[in-house]
Image (cartoon, rainbow, N blue to C red; front, side):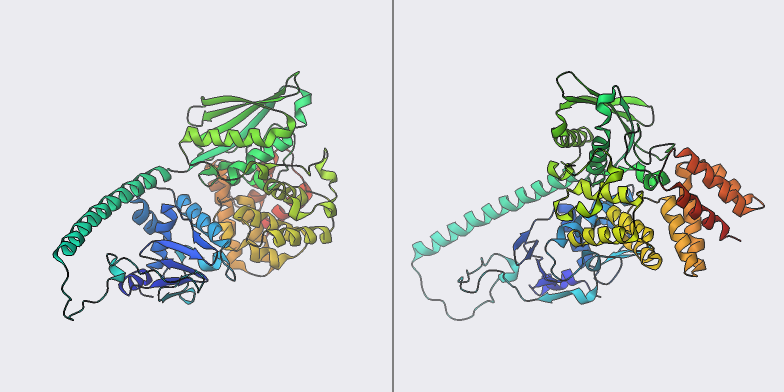
Amino acid sequence: MSNILSLARSSCGQIKIANLIYDPTSKVLSSEAGDIELEPRSLELLEMLLSHVGEPISNDQIIEEIWNSKYISKNVVTNRVSTLRTLLKDHLTDTDPTKLIVTYPKKGYFIPTNLVSVVENESWAPEDVPEVEESPILECTTPAHSFAPAKSKPQWLLWGTLFGLVILMVSIGLGVFTLKTQKAATNGSLFVPQVQLLLNKIQCRDDQAKQYLIPIKSMILRSQSAYQYTELANLQSPGYFLQRIDSSCRWPGSLNNSSQADFKLSLNVWKAEDSELHVEALLYRASSNKVAWRNIYSATPDELHLLVHQMTQDFADYFQLPKPVLPPEQLLMSNLTEQPENTVWSNLKAEMLSDNEIYFFSRELLFSDVTSNEVENWVAKIKRVRPVPEPELHIWLALLTYKSGQVERSLEMLNREYVTELADNAIIYLLKANLSAKVGDTAHYQSNYLRSMSALTTVVSPQKVLDHYRHPSMSQSCLSLWQEVIASQSEHANRAAIIDNITQFCQFLK
């Protein structure tokens, strides 16, 4: 389709995007509720999509045009698209954000032609508000020249008008210059490359503090995964989706993780005589394993969410990143019991859960001995409060759907574009391969098999993966390699189910 943005500008019109209106002259996106505030990068991305409606734009094109660089991670684009979708979902009425900004696998992103059109200038203001005549200085509202004889006016009025116009033009010139300067400064401060962070280990000095490791680990994990400028290296490890959040000294996905993280986070936790909990946070440079940043935090057990929120703010300051936007109350774990594995799932009301609790209990349920009905009820409850879940939550719900026995439905969910927005993970590709094989889709089984084995290089050496392909019995070497991976990931729940899936994955090769 033609360039809708240029068409709207040339016709002095506005662009209707689903139920939203974008004014290319004022660069304002609005809904019936009012204007929608967009960051400069999000605004540039939206305009680029409107310039190529119906045509997929690759990550490379977006990076080159918006960031003017060829050395930016593609994850920056993924996160920016995700941010724009998240912002729009609160204002869209009948359209899913992923249907508005569509991911075309391996080709990029686009807005469908049926959701966009050029319209005459519209207003969300009430009808009884009188229209105000717009300034004749704006290009799209300049009236046509009139050739009717002009009435004579006093000379002093003409000189006064001329003087006023000069002052107005100077003011506008200064305003435009200031606006451009501010925009350039904002753009420069908003863009920084993502920081790759590995949540590594926790040292607990006394038994009294151990009971707080689960909420501390869960809060930090959620605060960092929700932060768009941090890329969690833990997500690349198969162990991330194989382990509970427990009171051990490791975060899920940290064991033997050889991903190219920039920094590793370690904590020391202890409880003092004053009943306050003390947390020492240390950021290590992954390249040298030397401490790059250190701070000690103190809080009562009831204020752990405030402690973690402050820690996240301090990380952003150190990395010179924008401030995190997840409110501290969304980290609360008021519904956590001393033994999470004994949770009464029917008692949990999704509407009363914090953002952190939704993720924590979705993970916990995957590793719990529960009925299919309990799993289905939980998925339904979460979908009711999160109709458009974040990519990671979508994966947890897909895994729970598989646990409930809905094979084809879980495969459909894992094949959604949400999954491609996260880092490659061997266990997710393994499950997708198995599900594809079960429905007779050999081509996708083979494709996901190769992706899964490639993603294993996060926790095993690439040479071992290459040797696997040279082995006379690939099924046997596949099984041996995966058994080594599972053994290296320490204790994890549902071991029998995992081994069963690995066996199926490797035997389908025959």
